[in-house]
Amino acid sequence: MAKTAAKTTAAKEKTTTTGAGANGAAPSTAAARAEITIAEKLVELFRLQSIDSDIDKIRTQRGELPLEVQDLEDEVAGLEVRRTKLEAELAELEKGVADRQNMIKDAKASIKKYEAQQAKVRNNREYDSLSKEIEFQNLEIQLAEKRIKETKVLIETKKQVVDESVTLYKERKKDLDHKKKELDDIIAETEKEEKDLVKKSDSAAKHIEERLLSAYRRIRTNARNGLAVVPVERGSCGGCFNAIPPQRQLDIRSHKKIIVCEHCGRILVDEYVVDRVSGAGK
Image (tube, rainbow, N blue to C red; front, side):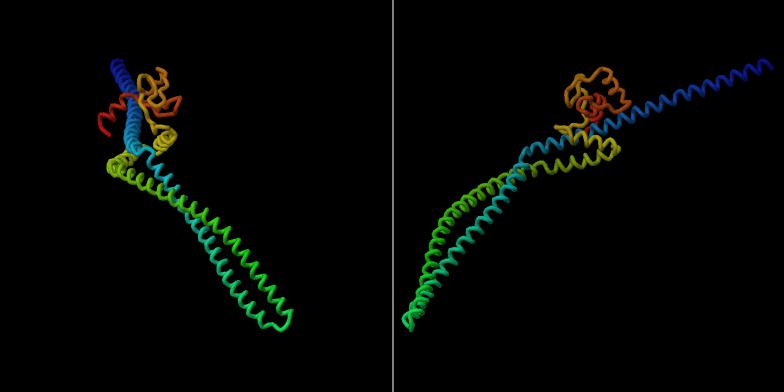
């Protein structure tokens, strides 16, 4: 009986020990899975960064051309509005001269009519009244001629301004056409490659959880060079080049959590992640 009890106890202890061992291994397996998961997240993030960096390079080739084209378009539009306004003002001045010239003709016709009537008047009062009308019309003619003279000076000045505006408009329009052609040529050369990379970027982004993707895009927007995920190079951040403490480098290599640079806020990856992306291709 004692032997049997001892065997039973031993068997129970063995079973208990085996169970404890299994339970003890479970956290280790979970941790390993977590490490793989974080590592894979970092790989996907760095892959997306690599693709987006290639897109940035293509867009950088265009340099300041898009901005120059936009500035020229705005300037040309402004010059066109100014030219239209000046031409309208010039037309208004010329219309004013024509109106006054017509008024002078009417005044002269009135004077002839009044002079003809003076020859037929019966008394001095009618004659004086017609004389005043003739005098008034002469004053109107003198005033109109003065205004015409002043307006013609304005017209000459305005014509010079219009001519200068037209010349400047043509020059800027020529510059705009040249810059547009230059930009179109560059776009034509890189358009297909850029479209392919944008598709790859969209595809890579689908493998990243929304929270991480939002953080990546936020960091990338704020980063001057568009780098949100950077490798550790010679113990320094690949983005801001500040030194990373040894313990933090160990944390980065352990892939237990996503580590960001304390100085610039970029996500840091180790050589394992870089090799995974560069080895597998983008």
